Length: 116
Image (cartoon, rainbow, N blue to C red; front, top):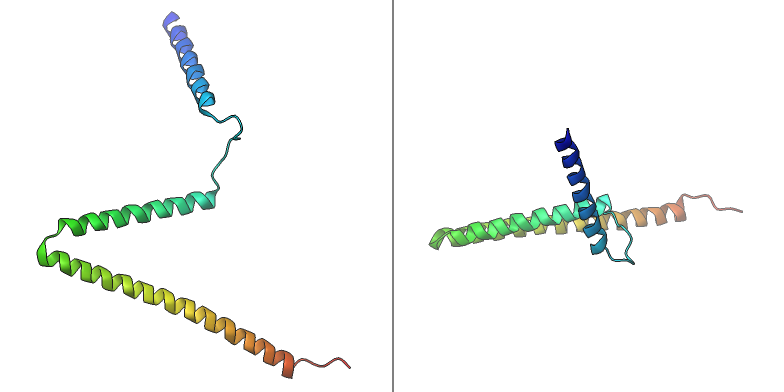
C-alpha cells in the first residue's frame, strides 16, 4: 500500500514540475490562444501540399537520364492543364457576373414599372 502512495506522490510531484515549466515558458502579456478550426484546416492543407510537393521533387531527383526529362515534361503538362482549367473557371465566373449585371440593368430599364 505504501508503494501506491509513493507512486501517487511522485506523480503529483511530476505534474507540479511540468505545470511549473509550462507556466514559466508562457509570455506574461500573451493570453492562451486556441487555433481557429478554419486556420488549422488551412494549415494542415498547406502542410500536406508542401510534403506532397517535396516528395514529388525527391522522386524526380531520384530518376536518371531520359526518365527524369520525361517526368518533368509530364508534370509540366499536368501543371499547365490545371492552371488553364482554373483560369477558365475564373473567366466563366467573371462572364456570368457581367451577364447577370447586364440582365439586371435591362430588366430595370425595360420591364420594371415606372412610378407615376
